[in-house]
Image 1 (cartoon, rainbow, N blue to C red):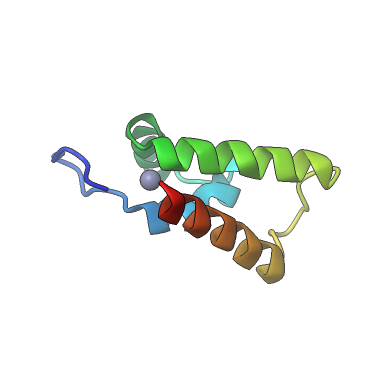
Image 2 (cartoon, rainbow, N blue to C red; image 1 turned 180 degrees about the vertical axis):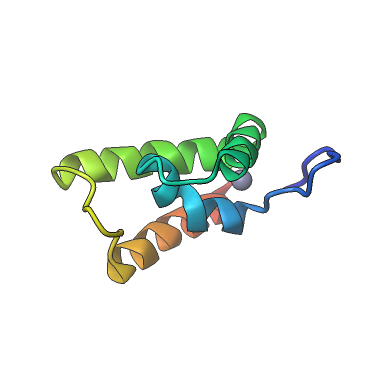
Length: 87
Ligand SMILES: [Zn+2]
């Protein structure tokens, strides 16, 4: 997966995945949020991932206050990785 070059450092998908829960909790710095949204605008895989994550959180009731549990995080990463491998 490649992205066109930007003046700002590119956000890899792995970083998106790491930060997306903070994004959903609206706890990112403005710059980080902008970079994340920029990546989201270019990356179909992460758009899908965000959709799946939102769906999962909706099913789970609501976003937990502190953080997504490590187990849930791993599970989402697995889903995400599997989806990319199936492309
Ligand atoms: Zn991505």
